[in-house]
Length: 565
Image (tube, rainbow, N blue to C red; front, side, top):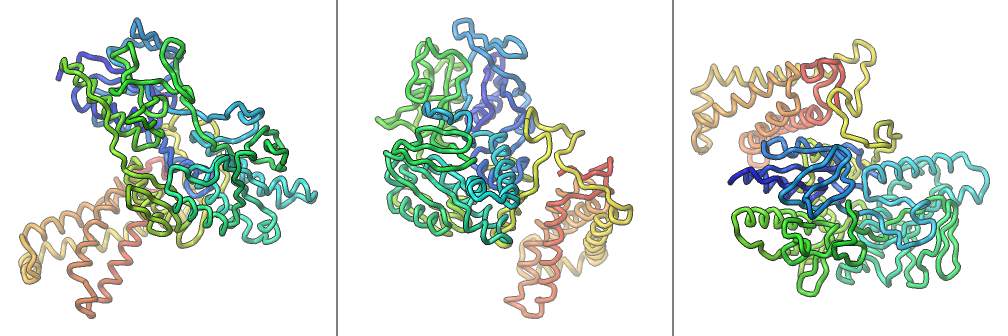
């Protein structure tokens, strides 16, 4: 397909990234614009705020997302206005012409005109919001340990969450677990701490079946979260030290977390285009803006109504809308008519805390550990970046088994997040330390490398005998399997000893060890293989550590003697 058409996409969220990939794969010139140089995985922001994940684990460079698509370009810029008639987008980097435009600018907090809410409450809709909230929570807890005035102490240890949707529930559960970790050595402070969840409806998670809402409320209550339901207890005013409710009740707190909904975040004056509630742009069934056939609005910025039901604006909807808008543009380029958007409901999921979650899909309703595992699997699948998945899975395992949290203060550049750090400025570094200490990773890599290189060389010299052993096991293509076995061990071993592409080498060896262990050292079928099985299990554990921590200071991966994390 001709690439002469220019498609400009504003916003590198779920819908914008999806549309970019579809169009670039079809050979269309795509320019993706966003104020940040990274894509943020919004569903995991609450885990950054509550200390379970580190900030860099939920972001991914946009340039890396598009690196396999030559037709796609990325521009880090701020879009100030759009002239739909002249087909020009005005940015702080200059004017940009377009043939087709996709608005995927996402959302911003909706404060419902509550006085003081925008100034004194803390939303969680961006990475910088999550980082600032975590810094604030850690500061409050540390100050509470030193506070002597009872009133000030209670205010520091009272945390009010406004909104009982998925985000509010997830933050309430995560915050309760964070307090349990940080105040484990201060039982009196833990007893004084309060997490209060304010919900203006009669139940939590109103978009879920009532049985799951009831389970969620019960589980949060067991965690010590105080739930307050009532339309008469809506927030009336927020000050730096008090939350005032409509029934006259006041709650003394220095922490008000706002999760009571979001609204559209348009980049242009919407006076000449139709809008609906929450400032969303009304679109046709094809996701096009009325009167502008070459302009699409998708994701949280779009008001999409299907079969008399307004879509909620969740991630699965954004992904499908991005794909649908891209395919409609391709149809227009071919001279065909755009097709109406059809949403396939893949269900809803929310996590309440450690080992507890809820999932709803038609007749399928999961809760407890099964819902929790389903939630983890869904988000791990959609999280961009293999390294991010590995790091996040590792953090989840540590939290599940050890109840550990990343509660160290975050140093610059995180508070600003102006752009994704360049390779020359690592986010975190491993200190050089004393000279002997820096060689410990090299010694470990050398030991592992020796094991695998020795195994590969031994198999080369006894190729025929090893091939016959594989054939005796009844496995197909023994020569090919043995050759692949040797190549995996050689490549992985050389990678480890040189410290070059070390994580890839470690993953290759893990991929080799797992099937080898299950097939040739199954101690359940042959108890004499127990020692070999345990040895391979230890090697897999060591390789997992290498794949997580990297090569260490002395390696080709880190020529400046620092290991970028």
